[in-house]
Image (tube, rainbow, N blue to C red; front, side):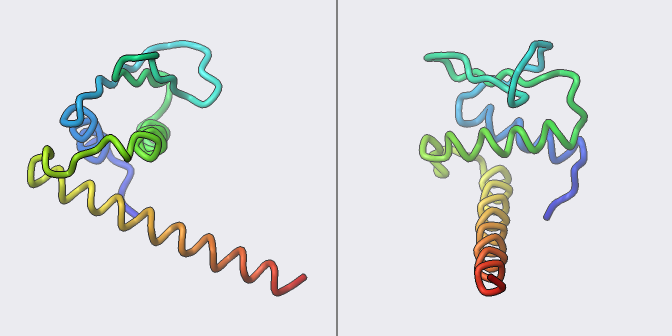
Length: 107
């Protein structure tokens, strides 16, 4: 897990910038806290969210656009941070599977 700081938020915003997405913080009635503008690479996030919520939303969006990301097009620093995110996500998925198996065993 990484820290929920403005620096982490800026690093995530840099990933989006480098893959061609514009991140905007606007007010609105978003059910999930964000919306993707049709046929454009724009992510609109609820501007009233705190830093932690913004990071979580950007990570969620990143998971949905993951297939569009060309790691070769990212700068070295950004690619390293993106790789860290992928490893963290893989570990979380593994932990969820283990927890799910434990629940099944107790039934």
